[in-house]
Length: 253
Image (cartoon, rainbow, N blue to C red; front, side, top):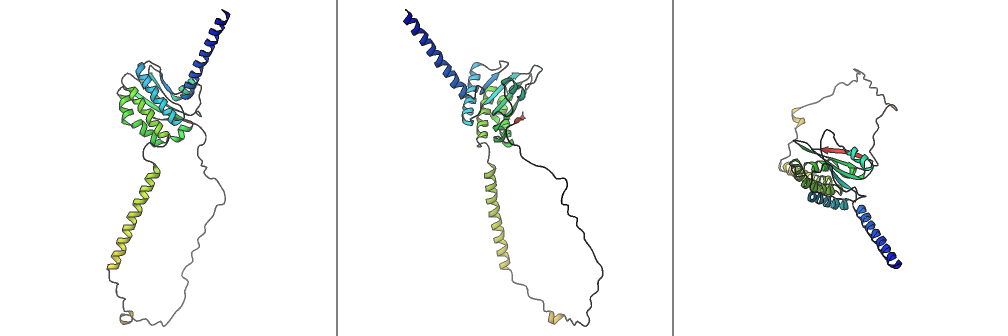
């Protein structure tokens, strides 16, 4: 009898360990439990939440940092990114991408926040791409929040790894190539035009003009002195670039 009790206890301890390990692995996979959507006002159904969570989990895996969303109904109090950080025990130095959707009576708004490494890897142009994308804007504005947040997750992942929009490096290379071709054509055209023209005849000065120098003198008619003061010290401007973590609100619609 005692052996059966011990066997049951051992089996129970083993199962608890397996469940705990699975939960720990899931939490690690989703960025310490940060990746996912919080439906504070129960505006989404279970299927929509699952769809959003899967899209966010995929984006988080591609980015290597948590990405999340917060949906709530406005009842007299706004919710900002700083409120979300405080509630989750985070700071602006933690890596995170966050979308907050505010549902009002006649309008739905959404705001994008980036923190930590995401603040520097997602530039302003990419932020506008995300916020103004048709699948994000029209879906959320028309109440299809799940579809809009899924699109946001995919676009944020592309922006973070540097594949969203046209690269500035590519634009610069194309501009330089076009400029070089245009310059080459212009130079060749001007050169050909000069070659087609006949050289002008020299003016015969010996036939139509005569110069006989009979007197010379030098006379000083004025003096101008220019003084330049060169400053070797004084107040100057200070510049620099932001380093380390940080971030915050990047825009909203």
